[in-house]
Image (cartoon, rainbow, N blue to C red; front, side):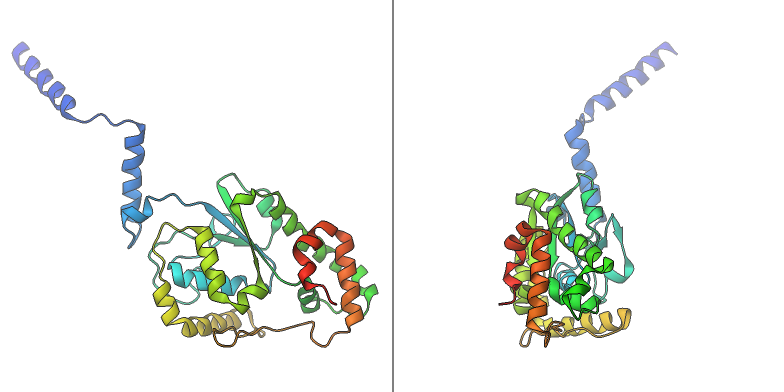
Length: 278
């Protein structure tokens, strides 16, 4: 019996000695390799690259659906809704096959969410539009006195609040996009955004460029069916949008400029002066 016990102890010791000792780095690498295998269609050499968690902060009617759906068709990945949720209606609006279920960014209209974001959200994309276009889209404004309505003040506080959050973000990890630039040169905007996102997964530019008009038609059709109403039709050959300030009195437009500038001269001069009515 003693002899048998000695033999068993020897075998156990020998087996343990032959196993490599896993330090913390090895364990993390093993876990990462496991995660890589779980990523549908994504090889480990792509999935091992660390990605930043990213917010897309925007106002309604500022191109977030066009930008997000276009990026989804290029990256073949879903869009998430902040915080940390993937919304079905956003994730695959154009019904494409994803190579991964990991969102490439999380979008929101609420700057308060971004203010309270945990440290894991490392990057911020701010997508904005001419505030006068948005004001005339959402409110009935016929004279400068209308600007004193509580709902308009609330809107402008939210609009400027997004810029204040952006200003307080690490300058190396933030990126600002104007809706007006995006509809003028969509592909240039998308290219810059992809460079900023720096995805760990492949980028399907060729497929997107070959089928871009089809993708854009799908994006627009699905947007109208989901939200109702009308929207501008953006295309590569004829970028279009709806200009809500068209035909408005220029003096009224100037008074709106003055009103917004008075609320925050720094934000106006740095980001909004390009929209000033001459």
